[in-house]
Amino acid sequence: MARLPSVDRLLKADAIAPLIDTFGRVETTAAIRNTLAGIRKDMAASGDEPPTDTAILEAASEALTQNAAPSLRPVFNLTGTVLHTNLGRASLPEEAIDAVAAAARGASNLEYRIGEGKRGDRDEHIEDQLCAMTGAEAATIVNNNAAAVMLVLNTFALGKEVPTSRGELIEIGGSFRMPDIMAQSGCTLVEVGTTNRTHLKDFAGAIGPDTGMIMKVHTSNYVVEGFTAEVPEPELAKLCHDNNIPFAIDLGSGTLTDLAQFGLPHEPTPMEAMKHGADVITFSGDKLLGGPQAGIIVGTKDYIAQIKKNPMKRALRCDKMTIAALSAVLRLYADPDRLVERVPTLRLLARRVDAIRGVAERIGPALAAAVDGFGSVTDTACESQIGSGALPTRRIPSAGLAISPNAKSGTALKALAEAFRALPVPVIGRIQDDAFILDLRCLEDEDGFTAQLPALDLPR
Ligand SMILES: *Cc1c(COP(=O)(O)O)cnc(C)c1O
Image 1: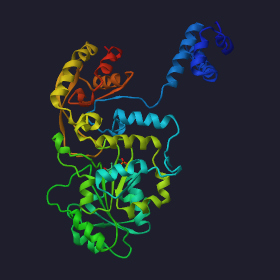
Image 2: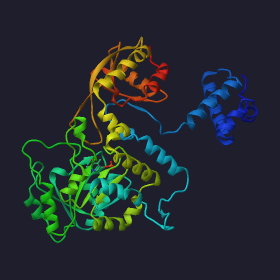
Image 3: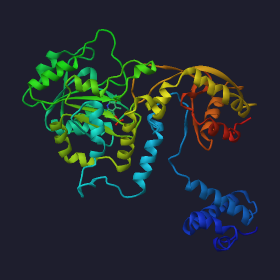
């Protein structure tokens, strides 16, 4: 039986130069060695003759290309969930992307006051904007809203008690559970009221010398309906102020714009929370705000100053790219007339069903051709949702395309979803009612979508 070529011999082949140019000598040598090892094993099992040198190098090149591909890749989010946490939540406006690139490329005045030639504070880049928009006296930001909540709790209630309504002990995803967050922040949760009804007297009865603060948590991913009662925020604020403790509200999504303009129900805003007397308010940067991942904390000057002095703040602080992006997004909010058109999250939520139907009409034929012989494509009405816990029970009418396999089996449906995920830019849809559904609300790059359809590899 013929022998496999040596690594040395392959490294001397003409076809090796471009590989070394692209991937470097170390990686290329390792790939050749791995490829040879694989072939050697196959040959031992099959008794086949060795492949040609060219075929071995091609296999090595393929492995190198696969290894070099970034793990974090763009995908088409056609799930119908606009803010999909697993798919990266908000897409940034172009203005924010440019700002991130500029901040990433070189040195900046991140913590430096250019006029004075002195050290500054990174929050200065966003604080005025946040105050102007929310009516707060001061603001700071951290890595995400979970961090913001922990920082607030840790600042005002380390070793102290935090009375919280039993109706608000939320879990957001597996690891963010309010009782655990309180414990990890060094606070003692004092449950008050019941699941469906909590009254002012419940809170009043729970306040004592060991109370650090009261935190109201927006129940962002569920609703309690029926015989319910919660304490109005102004009354909780007054109770806190009478007892000289801070009143904090965790809004979760915290939109800065009125969602009614998109035909959606009202979602509480930081501005309203301020007006209701909250001292500290936390919300996410990458939920309805449509910016980068960040936890935004706005509030009174004194309380925000205390938060900034907490050593945990340093551990949770934002990167310069986040600050650049958030500042750029907040600048867009200063021009409400063009806001919806420029912030992708709002643009996608505001997209009208007839416009989405237009997308279905334009890409439908290409999709039908791509699945020809495997299944058929029909227009379908569907329902999008905001995602990330905002207005959890509310669906937004949308339009999509449903692909039904000719073979009516779960295997065929799975194969369909898999083939779409295997495209160069994976397409993520959802399986529902024996069809693979693509909700087109979030499809803006129609050409990019159709251009890769010929690569769709279905078992026909
Ligand atoms: C989403 C959410 C959080 C966590 O925010 P992240 O930005 O995901 O860290 C905290 N509280 C509420 C009420 C939320 O909805």
